[in-house]
Image (cartoon, rainbow, N blue to C red; front, side):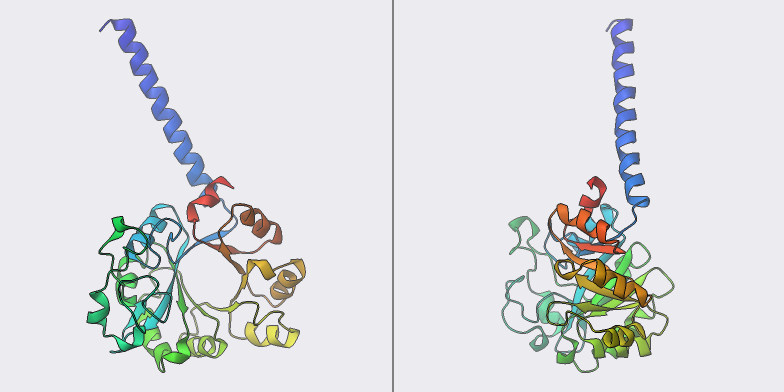
Length: 272
C-alpha cells in the first residue's frame, strides 16, 4: 500500500470515529438535557417481552430514567412481576397468578408469546428486579389490583425499604387506598396515583385529598389538557403521562409540560 493511500485511509478512519463519537455524544446530551423523565413502560416493551429482564436490560441500555413494571403476588406470598392477574396473555401457562407458587411460575416461558427469540424468559420476582436494577436506573413499581392480595403493601414495603438509599424508587396504583397505605408505611418514598377515564375528571376536593399523600398524579395522556395539568400542579404534584406509543405524543406531552412520559419506546425521546 502506498504512503498516500495509507494516509487517506487513516484519515478516513479518524473521521468515521469522530462522526460516530459526535452522534453518540449528541444522543447522550439530548437525553441528559431532556426536560422529561423517560419511563420505560414494562421495560422497553415495544421491542422485547414486557416485564422481563430482557425488557429491563434494553431499557437501561437505552438510557431510560426509570423502568416501570407491574406486581402481583404468588400463591406463597411472593411479589412477582407480570401485568395481568392471569398468565394467559404473556406466558405458556393459564390461570390466575395467585393460584401458583413462585416455583411453578418460574417454570413458565414468559418470552415466546412475544417472539421465539425470547424463549425461556422467566417471570421475575420483585426481589430479583430490585437486586439487579436498584441504583442503576429509577424504579417505578405499579401495584396491580392490590385489593386481590391482602397484605401486599406490607410485603412490598418490606422489600423496597432495603433499597431506598440506592436510587430513585416510586410506587403507583389505580387503587388510592393502597397508595395511601404505602405512604403510611414508607413516608419518605414518592408515591403516585394513576388516573384513567374511570376516575376523570378529578374534583378539587379529590385533588386536595390525593396531594395530601401522593407526590405524583400519573394520567392517561388522552385525558390531559392544560386545565387538568394546571389543576394538578397547583396542588404541588407532578405528572407523568401514559402510555406513549406514537411519536407525535411526545410533542403533545412536552406542550402540556408534564414531568415525565411512560412509553413502550424509551429510545424515541432521543429523536423528538
